[in-house]
Amino acid sequence: MKLKKLIAVMTGLVMSILLASSIPVSAGTAIGYGQGTQVNAENMPLGALDFDAEYHKYDAYATTPDRNRIIITFDQGYENGYTSQILDTLAEKNVTAIFFLTGDYAKKETELVNRMIAEGHMLGNHGMTHASLPLLDENSAKEEIMSLHDYVLENYNYDMQYFRCPCGEYSEQALKIVQELNYKTIFWSGSHVDWLTDKQPDPGQSLQKLVSNAHGGEILLLHSVSQTNAQILGDLIDNLREKGYIV
Image (cartoon, one colour):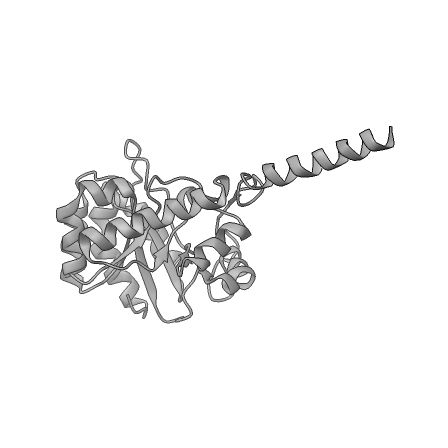
């Protein structure tokens, strides 16, 4: 009986090892990022600052260390006809942005991606399939990042270095993997609900909200599918500069 019990225990250990090789990189836990609504005396969201303090060791950031600057970023999941107008405005205002591409966007929108590069913008990695990184096993997570990295490098001769977690979901292990692949993870400290194409926010209200919530060191998340963003972008940049921020 003792021998049978020992065999059972050893079998259980072997099965545990085999199962561990295929578990998600976060043991199934995905943390949903949000900067929150509470702010400090400099109008910086406490949630973003807490994230920076906890995860900067993994080269993961929700704000930029330059407290005089605001960085504008766009998530590029698919094309909705407004990116050209957004690029026109950025060129007019002499602003460079980071565009986080999915694999589908990189493959379909070659003209726009080439224009981003030609006009001095940075390309970021938003995952080949926009899969939630913490829900993938380690090999799949690396493939999600590096397959898009290699595609952009081969087809656009552009070496991406910034990663934005799809779905805004992360785990500590996922951040470690991104760092191991020589990427920096970029979240955000400012945003608004701009991605619902059939329910776009009022332009005036959105402009007022984005300006009133502005803060030094802000990383601003926008979506290029938004008609509202395309409409207010020029005024937004002007207002941020009038407040003294470098954009």
